[in-house]
Each structure stands twice: as structure tokens, then as C-alpha cells.
Image (tube, rainbow, N blue to C red; front, side, top):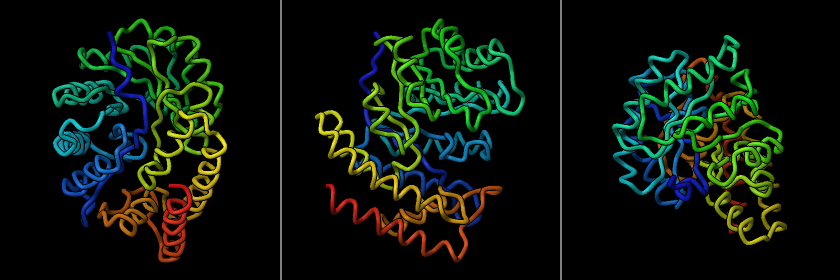
Length: 305
């Protein structure tokens, strides 16, 4: 019997942590992991989009995950995104993730070439075969991957007993409903778009994974609490405040994850570095935006927690 309870809740997407020379910072990774443990989130989603996964080497990803697992010490559900743009590297990462004892692995489809569905299924199943004792989560993010999870491909993937659900980051909330109705209660669907958090939860997403959760986990935890209690008016007020913060973070010249790491330095004292090229770094002009967003988060906590 699969254990889905460990996936139901707020699961922040983990950020890439760098030192001053743009190398992975084990100290930063461990500090960020402990921060999430202290905030009381359900788990972390490691080496995904927020972790700048397509700009990390296989060794980078291994080092990050090793330090997460060490610092988490069993206190977090850990989902490791293992997809690379070739099957062999992805399988190597899947095997490594299982050896560390992660709860699940996840993968986007291969990007650039638009592969037929049977090739995407083979890719995911090959990855899963390298971690035969580990749950598998399909990552559906068509706006970045260039290919969407169709109902026929989802049906094909459910033939794999290790597949437990979908991290759904497509924009239509209806997709969550469609996946849930097709799969039933023995599968889980995670809400992906942070700006639609309560919409996804209300339509049926049992868990949520998001890239901005790390900057303000308390606000997402409180929204989730209100959704569970049926207090949607209170949840909506926080969602609106969160969305304004996200819009502010996205208004910088530099990449949003660079903004978030700068916010975490101001609000939480975390030293996580910047972002890896070709993602654009923050400019001097972005400092005001970072300060404003950090202040907005503090104010939202004062108003809603």
C-alpha cells in the first residue's frame, strides 16, 4: 500500500546554493535545509526548476542531494528531481537518489526535441527502473518543457506501479481535476503555480510544490491551514498578498530566484549566493525591489499570521 500522506502538504522547491566562485555550497545547502525543517514544511523538492537544474552537472546534483539528506535527517519528505536531457545521466541520478533514501524521484520530459509520447514514456520508465524501490512523480510543466502531459500519456505511465502522481505546473487549474479524475485516490496531484495555490487546492490538489514558498513558507502554510478549515475568505486574502509579492519579485532585471535568495539573506540571514549563468544576476537597481519584496513579506506575516 503506497503512503501518500507524506506528500500531502507544503513542499518548497529547493534553491541552488552557491559560494563566491559559483560552486555548490554545501554549507548553504545544509543551512537552507535546516531552515525548512524549522519552518515546519512537509518536505522539499530538490534539483528542480528552482534549483536551476538544467544548469547543474550530474556531480552538482549529487552533491546538493547528499547535503540535503544529511541535514534533513529524516525530518522532511524529500523528492529529488533527476531528469537530465539524456537517459543515462538521469538513470545515474535516480540510482544515486534511491541509495540516499529519498521518498520519491521526479522528472520532466526531455526538452528541445519534441519526442513522441511512446519515447517520453520510455524515458520516464527507464529512469524509474534505475530506482525500483522509489516512488516516481511526473513533472508536468509544458510552458518550459515544450511538451504537455496528455491523458493518454498519463494512462500509459500509470502502468508503472512506481508512478504515484503528478507535479502539475501547467497553468489551467482544470488539469489538476482531469488528472485526479483519471487516476483516483491512489495517486496524488501537486499544485504547481504558486499564484493559483488555493485554486489548485480547492479543485483537489492534495499537496503543493512551489518555487516561491521558500521566501515565505509561513504564508503558504497558513493558506493551507485555512483551505483545510474551509475558511476560504481568509485564504484568499493571503493569496492576494502573496501574489503581489510574487509580482514584485518578478519585476527585477535579475532572475526571480536571485531575488528570493537576496530576500532570504535580509529576512532570514541565509547566505545562498546568486544564480548561475545564463540566468541574469541582480543589478544595483534591483536592490530596491529586493528590499520592497522583503518588507512586503514581513508585513504580510504581521497581518495574517
